[in-house]
Image (tube, rainbow, N blue to C red; front, side, top):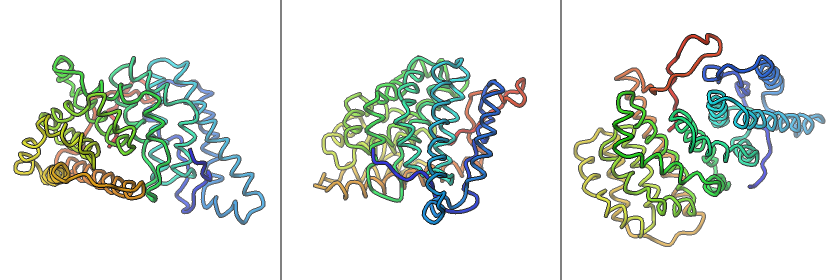
Amino acid sequence: LTPRRVLMAPAASMRLSLLACALVLPQVAVAQQDYAHQMESLAQRHAGDMRGAARHDPEGAQREAMAQQMLNDMLRDVGAMLDHGSATAKEAAIARLLQMAVQTSSGSMFHPTTFRNAAIRSGVVPKIIVLMRDGSDHAKYLGAGALQALALDDPTTTLDNGHQAAICQMGAVPVLVAMLKQGAAGRAAARSEGVYEFLQTSAASALGTLAEAEQCRRSIVQAGAVEPLVAIAMFGSDQTKLAAIGALDMLQFNAADVKAQVSSAGANSLLKGLTQYGSDVLRESAADVLAGLNAPARALSVEQRGEAVKELRLRNIERREQLMEQARILYGGVRTPFKITNPEARSQQLDVEYMLG
């Protein structure tokens, strides 16, 4: 993993909001909360154009070292909760990691790549994968979101930072594909609360992101993800369909063998149907995947493939945002069936909308 400078520029709003995840944190010790407050205070003190300070301020290097230590401490806390916490505390640790990863993409004192490099080096990913394998549906759901967030490469460059390959090597693919393959029994058992589709949506979104890396793409196909993705695209909600279509789009990109496998699983007739009867967003997505399936594979350099994959990702993200905006307008948003305890009012159960795609 290529090391990057720790601190981001610019904008006064770029501060690390460690307490923004308080909604999903469980009953944590007072010392842990005090520590979070201390780190929030440090983040506020040192937010802003820290990279510029490092260049022009003699104390800039020291501040950057402090920020690196802060990041390592945060990740160490997450790892400790995953190792020693209760089931609820472990889920809250994943939620906290997911929140931090999302914040680095929308403005914080840590560069997105720096944060992801540190998170993968910290050893939290294998712990998340174990919890997804053995834990609750909620742990699976949060874990898939965290893996997806950590797998995202820097959108400002086509360089592969190695995050996706590293996560796949740590064993993420079998757990995520298993979430797709829970079968009719799992669907029937969870239907009343809508859990099943949310698990499938989060798994499909994570697999679509991991599939940007060639070795991950091969692992996902070998693990048997194609057929359940086609089935999900056929029977799921619009959000689930879009996640599955996006994953299939990334898997089949410029890969003749996968194109044939996706077509054999019945994707052509499904996609043709969606281009005629789906929502506007689904019609566009289905048409693009259908065109990709019918396009011959061609020789691409690493740089060319990186650029094309980046365009696919950004297009899929834009369409997910369009679909979520439609849901907000029509239904007031998409809420998960999972209940989280608010530590500020522990008797009160709150629905939380997780934007995992």
